[in-house]
Length: 139
Image (tube, rainbow, N blue to C red):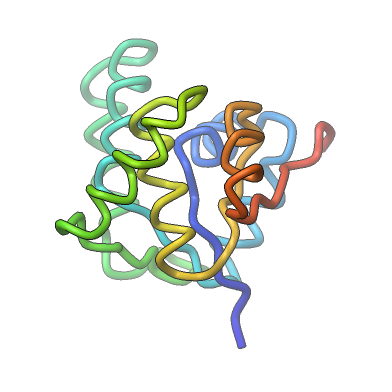
């Protein structure tokens, strides 16, 4: 069985920038069962648009939304429905985490798998019993 994880924006941006932990994200994209929400992809897009322009954001959006990527598995998308929005709102209400990150945590809770991230905000969700797989600080 593939290793199921939810990718947050931090993980995707680490992968794109080959920042610490990026090879762990690459492995999830190559041979795992990666999941995301469109809210978290939106966070990736706005960060990229601010730092690298609209073209870079559009290219990454199209790549991650593609059915298949060469040498990898497609990202699976968890629908942003009433249940997920309510879970994210409840997580956000506890404080200490951004609203987009609350969606990644809610997705992990729904799917029963960890969030793959290096974002220290996710320490809060560990306190809620949501599993986090931390990216290493080296590559």
